[in-house]
Image (cartoon, rainbow, N blue to C red; front, top):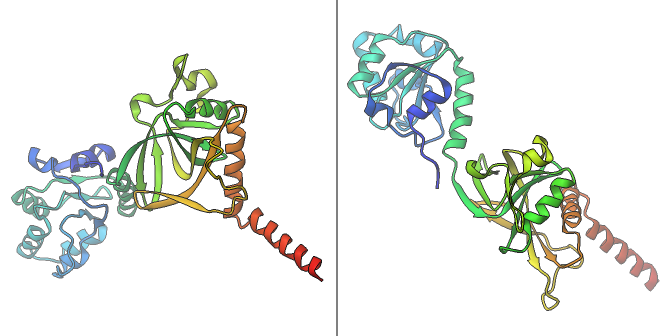
Length: 309
């Protein structure tokens, strides 16, 4: 599910100056990520008008507005200020025309002003809404940044995810989240973060909760990271066959986005932190076009061919 975002949330985030705002207009939800600059609508073309979009007015829109009669401009903005329209933002430190305010008041549509340039505000608003309205979920897992890549670590409770994370931190990697990870799909990629209440904290069995930032330094923790890979820690069982060559390219899917997935068996005496570092390095090499298994299979075929001769 996605988070809720109202026009008031956006106004507070960008410190917008209210021109007209009632209590009910400020509670209007922003339902779509896109924003709208109503050039065609002001010219009378409403066939593809998107009522749910935030409306931005810049120099071009206000310059065109001056060529319109008051009545035509008023009727146009009565249509633009639909009950589904979250609000209007006038950019570039321009003064909002009275006809826009009148139409907005008639339709109970909040109006704001900002000194930010229109194109800059449009880009910033899209980025903000992409994060606020992103589909999200929470899972039981650990999240680390290893070699500058976000790595999700799965595994049954008690298998040692926190202990492995601790070893990785001591080896210079960063903790993002321990035990619970919030995942959001932002622009077709997965962003991972920790719930605010447990950010920077880790539970170690037998010790309790520790503050990772204070114990290992502020560089040992990170607020969020783009999730690139997934490691599943499973208890070693000789009856279960594991991939010996590494020629199985598995993936796992969250919120419609697939990422590379590797199962690693956990057994006493095995340095899982080192194995994870090797696994992530191998995945990065594969993405760079260097596949050791394929190279080995090619050498093997060449060897067999020479032997047959």
